[in-house]
Length: 613
Ligand SMILES: Cc1cc2nc3c(=O)[nH]c(=O)nc-3n(C[C@H](O)[C@H](O)[C@H](O)COP(=O)(O)OP(=O)(O)OC[C@H]3O[C@@H](n4cnc5c(N)ncnc54)[C@H](O)[C@@H]3O)c2cc1C
Image (cartoon, rainbow, N blue to C red):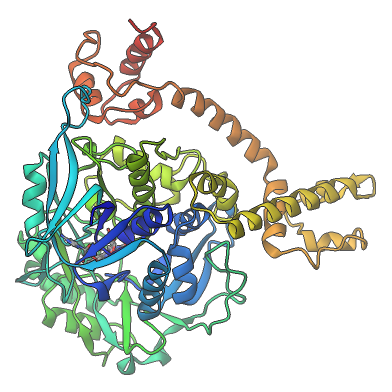
């Protein structure tokens, strides 16, 4: 059978890519090394958080699946940063690993036209692009299929690689090194070499995970309980309410003794002994890194997170480590509440191959091989949400490639997903990339609560948003407009209720004391929240909108795909080389490439303004 789309990898990126491609009507295969590990969370049992929660809502708004799976698999829901401005509110859920993976599998199985195949892809088959179809700087090869270990060939028009931490994966725990993609799972060895043969350049990155503890061996009396929100707020715009019971997480801290143990054994840490050379995430450092880099701090916080309702495991969030097991044991026993804790699975680090992202276009298609898309950790990101977001976009654009229709490239002013992809293609990360709210320039517009207003129309245009989701958005819009009109029309002491609402401490519910005829009891909380934000922050939103309009002027200065930079002698050599390598799509993107100066942009702008020969 010849597929339209073959997705390689059943992690968060792969699941989302396959979901999108199949739901858009493509004959799709998802090939993964273990079917029982589809949707598996390699590291922490949690979805969302700052920046990441924003992306989960955006994935949902476009018609993706991560939010739906999170609502089914979640066991503790919290809206982070409620005490701060709405731009940085972010949903987060602790997940039951088993329920979450079951939800992912269930959702995938509900889609027609999607085959789930167990196997390891060893080769991507590509053939030269037909002469006459080539453009300068464009692909010289085109995908025609993939080959699995054992020789089975799956012919396809487009392939999406989402290989996560598996490509030549190497696990480190103290001096012990074991090939593997994550604990208990084999590495994917053959594919890297074939990607290199296709002309892709690979790099190496690393990430780490903490020990898992036996939950019966923890002294909870010494810990601070952290409950979920009541009522819990769902991720998906489709979920009306959450009825599952919520569990507690627990907080404790490392001690001076913990830090002494680490310092005394630092020469046995693979990061310090020279055993690991590749870069790990600075924002998510190992505990040995934290202790050595922040020597003045006498303690670090730990969240103890249950891995599920029935799981015997507690995830020790805050102490990722690759120190040898005996050091991990001593270190854990020096932490309050964990004196007698048993480590069921020791922490470890993993090194893996990735593809530096100057080799992909903003559609996530490789520049060298037409029809070959990359998404997730293979693009140097870290995190389930980053992976899922790219997976969804790669799936959508894989379909656009098959149909030769307009691809989807989201702007920095439209979505965190747009910010992430733009960051990747203009400044390839030198450490695993994760999303932060601070990466976005237009945070007040890119909020969690309005992801549906921003992106559901886009998902509808593409064909991923069904009638139910569309009707919910239109009903919400209508309700928002009606409430805004009512607040503007009703008056108290000569001022409209809308004006009263702009006072910092005012809430819509309180306005009833000013005008008892205002009936908000039947209005959904998300509508009230949206109206409060829109009215209270109207001035800031307008100011940001002016910046967005200015930004759009620059972004709208498109650069032809085949633009010949070599002929642009007025440009500095470095700028010529960078533009030719990154092939920016517009002037804004060109300006964000590292090492490009305003003078380079001015020169390029002059050329773009000239009439084409
Ligand atoms: C030890 C460890 C620590 C981590 N720490 C953190 C952290 O602290 N914070 C954080 O945000 N994220 C962390 N992560 C990263 C997080 O797990 C990943 O970012 C996320 O899972 C990436 O999703 P993905 O879909 O790209 O790949 P993965 O979830 O890794 O999935 C890859 C999939 O591809 C399949 N596959 C690979 N090669 C082939 C092949 N050749 N043929 C067929 N199938 C193939 C695998 O079977 C797997 O299903 C960690 C991961 C690991 C392993």
